[in-house]
Length: 334
Image (cartoon, rainbow, N blue to C red; front, side):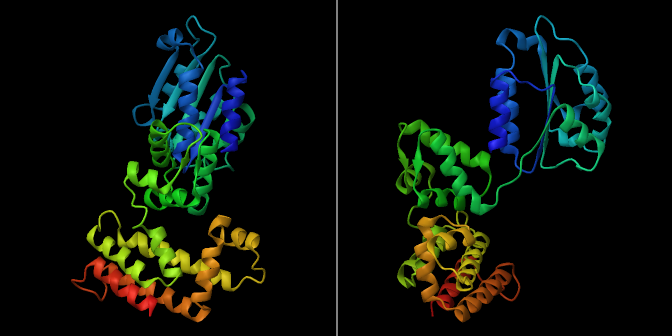
């Protein structure tokens, strides 16, 4: 995130590289940087003759280089953006010759998504020397809620920890998808607003009461009534609440409880750091650890594995995922 900001800030200050190679598993920052270049590097009247969008599947390195070596028309520079450049992966090393001596009046941008160059090869080294080589790494799930908070803070909004966690559990780690939903919320709420679970429920359609976050909390507190209500809701709405996601999140949760039991230092700050959770949620883990001793945690992890196998059709023919979840709740909460 900081490296992407630095690239954009440098461009705004007038420090523009002749080569940008944007690569990596997370497409969000690749799109943000390339869109910023497309929108801001040239004046509108210059774009017609001097801005070219190419696609990896429809071109080749020779054609890209040929265009890059042209001089701009009635402008200081031309901009060439190669989208879906990963389709050129088999021949991308041919770019070395051009990268060693890039045209100074051309800004050539490669959007090389879901892959990364081999950093041991010559192209990576030359790009670092003569251009900008940016790798956009995918965030781990436990980092996404913090990313949401920081992103909204930069836009003069705040969000409650529970609301951020709801977005992660519903939307996953796709930053582009999350950002789209944040933009929708910003359109209907004034700056300075705190995004709450209620706002998310009303405008995105995620239930603030019947979700995996609330299920984990209910299980951790051994609130059988609430846990069974949530699972019954999941059984009635299986498409919105797939069993595989619930099992995965519960497995992570109980793995964290097991990790908590093994911590010699159980201070709030250390628990948050080791379990990689927001300090706001540490109290929930402390309470859950009291309700689930180490032996019970090991048993629950075994039950989750068994339910996961059954959910894939092994040893549980003609049993719905909803019924499997109900059965699992009974066994966990016994």
